[in-house]
Length: 271
Image (cartoon, rainbow, N blue to C red; front, side):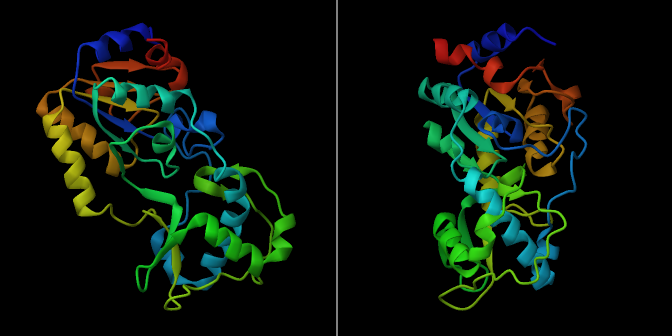
């Protein structure tokens, strides 16, 4: 455990910090994370893109669980960690925030220069024609098509999912795209998909110009985020991390603070 005051010294000594955030940044907003302190899965890994596309049964299961989970996920509010990182940007010290989260809570807290590496759960996209609609609007469609599911409740799971076990999904109706009849999918990067090339390039451009990197609430076990830490290390810029438990980049860090994200970053809100 490193004294969180060391983090203040790290931030104070840099002015072009690229911030990379993960699920640990949002747990105090009521959104569960995927991994334990050793970086291992806490639960069954999420559905892959290939499985989602392969069968209608999988899509029924996904959207039924999402319909239940969205009721709370969609109301989540930024916590102290989000507000602290928005303050860092307002102070002119953060050049970019790259988030692996899909909850848009950084934007809600006031960050404007954000790359949603894995997309955004508050939007749904047709895989046929590319049309989009808000997740809130699609929730209304799901509710109208499946009124009997409004009585269901379940424990929250990561990224708007819900732990609905032992439930028969066969009768659940998933509306198709109103424009073309195509398959609707949340506008996020599923496991098994790749992050769009232009998104990666934009983040890499900022890393190339940064003088430091700050990782907040990520074990970095997913390569899509780890690649930027690897790139920063290759450039020789210092990297600090705030995370409870092991990260994939522990041997690359200049500083590690093992503390809850909001507690470690609280000094930014006091300045």
